[in-house]
Image (cartoon, rainbow, N blue to C red; front, side, top):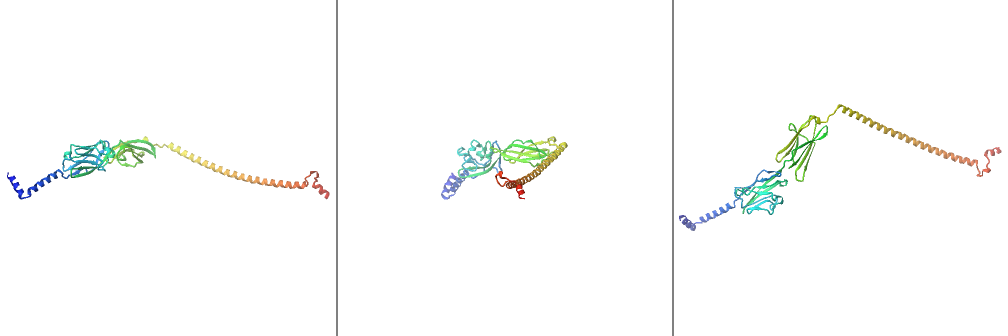
Length: 338
């Protein structure tokens, strides 16, 4: 009763009780819409291809998010990965590639935990995600990164034949993500230079790799092929030892036979060249003689024409008249004249 009486009397004489009531009302409202921070992992979250993964996210200070909006999205706010609002999950507007593949744990909502579970991770899931939380008067978000990785098959080492005085070895593996590192190593773990390296990307965005090396006798006959995933910092390795009989052998009689064959080949080439030179020389001489014969034939033909011309002139002298009955030899006429 004293308190009531005191309050009643003081209300008439001082504004202090009204201020207290206003302060209490403001404090309660502030508690209901208190500011918070959304916290996600600083380091990227690594997920194994084909497995499920969880993207952590929580409120600080710890408070219930059961009546808040929790939105997970990537580059576009309204095209979301997962949306929780009005106490339930919302499907309208969700990205098609995430439908049926996302879950928001409801068990930790009262403690401010809003992690997102993504089922059956794909290479396309890699990238940045935003964890956005909003109450009636305040909102905050955190950005985190998801990395996707996959370990491929164990390296398969095969012998592809002899090359450059050694053995060509090829190492193959498939199903890696992202693009892996490939290393040849000797028995002491030293890196060996590869002859060639090919990496191809399949339709499912996984990488296949093929690398080759030349191994020579008494040099790195113990070697291994190591393929490493730089995201997971894990690798797969296969080792092999090449025995001496696999290397090409050079016998003395084979060397002698090769030298003899080379000498015979050179001699044969020389004979062929000499034959063609002699043939060309003879052909030139024959052609020269043919020219001389043609020249002589022309001279003879010219002489024949001159002789024929002289015969015609002599005929005119011997037969001045065309009538042979009136023919009188010149020697008779000359005799009579004498």
